[in-house]
Amino acid sequence: MFLRNHWYTAAWSDELGTEPLALTMLGEDVLLYRKQDGMPVALENRCAHRRMPLSKGKIVGSEIQCGYHGLVYDCTGACVKVPGQVRVPKGTRVKSYPVIERHAFIYVWMGDPDDADESLIIDFPRLDHPEWGVTKLHLHIKANYLLLIDNLLDLSHVAFLHNTTIGNTPVAEDAEVIHERHGDMLRVTREMIDVPAARTYAEFGSHPGNFDRWQLAEWRPPAYFLINNGSEGTGLREPGQYRVCDQGEWGFQVYHGITPETDRSTHQFWAIAYELSAVSKKSRPEFHRQCHQVIWEDVAIYEAQQRSLDSDPEGATPENVNERVQISFDQGLLQARKIIARLLKKEAAAKKKAAGPVPQGRSREAAA
Image (cartoon, rainbow, N blue to C red; front, side):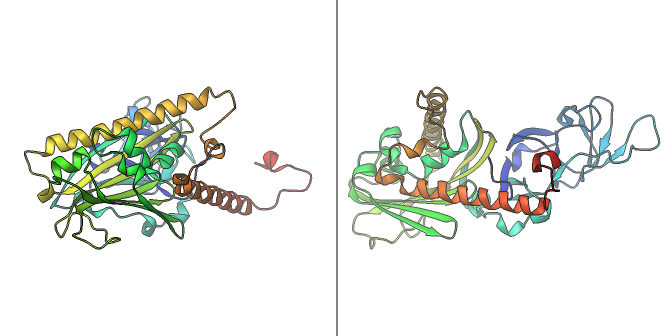
């Protein structure tokens, strides 16, 4: 089950050019394209006639033409032309989705269109800031999206999985961890004081000896993360003062837009953003390489964990995997699971209420 009354990342802005783009989101086949004015459109990727994927067709002006029999659909999903006849059969249309483009992302609302609220879109302003550099990827991962949330709310894994770049032993052994909840937003703060610098911090942050380091991971449902990574020489700040890329310290931000494809696959829109002044032009290719190494190490773990769950003799699943053994670092991810479960229950209740009472003598399934 997926939360539907939310905005999900569908593409990076530069992925959507002059050709149709197809992807599966929450089990639904979606088509993206741009109108003549550049505005994005999101439709069901399936012609109403014989269910041919519309992404196999072509863009004609601000409309999409099916590549099989030439039916043309406008940005609302209505069929506006059928070749060889004057009239369009009544009701010939495909589903349309609310879509917004903001800060290098294209977002699609997967729930009730009447509930789509642009103010709920999370701002990531540094992704298109002229004074910030960005390296980004669109990853297709063969694993349930919940495994990604677990990973990002427990950054102790950085000490072991990423120990040749951003991680070392103090990330797990010497971190003071604070868990906070603000409404449905979770923040996990990890602070390490007077510790040796991991490779990436030593190379690009110019930390010759020990330093202070912090990780601030913020999660907002259904699956958005902003992780601030900062560092400064030991003794140059008050504990608990966290900044990123200003006033002399070195760090970077990590963005994750996580969109379920199916219950066993996920789209991950990942980016690292940093002040251009923080990493020299000459050093940026190597900095990007190390950052990419980190995310690909995560992907390998997600997919290995999913394969293990699929063959687990005790019936463990992505949904219940955290019920067996719990450690102190699991607090944040366990809270996230509870929030998701509550929001799913809330959506189900709203859907049931909107459907109205079931006629006497009939089951709701029969009524549907």
